[in-house]
Image 1 (cartoon, rainbow, N blue to C red):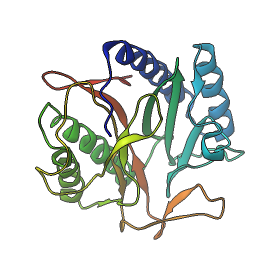
Image 2 (spheres, one colour):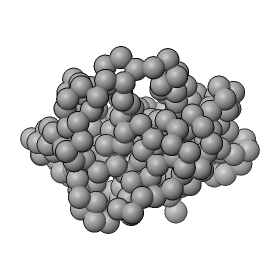
Image 3 (cartoon, rainbow, N blue to C red):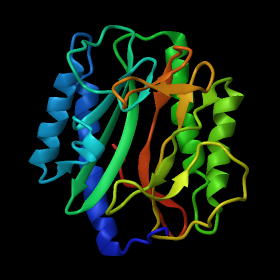
Image 4 (cartoon, rainbow, N blue to C red):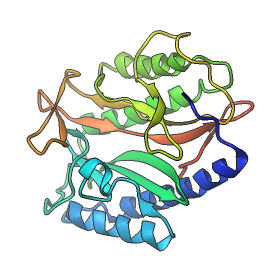
Length: 248
C-alpha cells in the first residue's frame, strides 16, 4: 500500500528533509583529502542530533553508523571507519534523519579534490538522470515512466544502471511502498497521486551493471571494480508536479 501523507505529515517530512540537506552541506565542506570517513560520520551524527532529530540509519537492521560512506567502487552501504580520503577519490554519502517520527533520505556523490574526467562525467550523468526522472513527476503519471527517464539518460551516456537496488517510498518508515527501479518501460506501474512521498535514487556504474556484497554483509561494490555513483532526493508529489524535500 502506498501511503498518502497529510499536510501535517508533509510538514514533518520537510523538517526532516531540511536537516538532511544541511547535513549534506556540512559533508561537502568536510570532504577533503586526509579526512577519515569516521570523522564524516561523527560530524553528521552530531549535527542531526543537534536538530532534535536522530540518524535514520544507525541501528537500522544492525547498521553501525549514522551515514553510509561508499568510496570509488563501493556503491552503497559502506561503513565509515579509519579510511582517509585521498585526492581523486569519489565518495557517496547517504544520509537519513528522523524528525518526530518521519524520515528524510538523500544521497550525493562528491569528488575529493581534483578528480578524473571520467569520474566527473559519471557524477554529472548520475545527477542529470535524477533530475530527468524528477522532471516527469506529476499526478496521474505512471511510476515506471520516471524509471524509464532515468534509464535513458544513463544508458545514452554509455553507463550502466544497477538493478539490484532501487528507490522507495519514505515517510513514517524509512522504506515504504512503492519500490522505484531506475529502469523499465514507460506507462507502467501505479499512478502518482498528490501526497505520495518518494526517495528517487539512481545508482550508476561506469562499467558493467553487476554488483556484489562484501563479507561485512553490507558494503555493495561493483563486480568489475569500476567507479559508481549514487544520487538521491526525497520528494513529495504535489497537485501540479513535485516538491524536493531534501533540497540543499
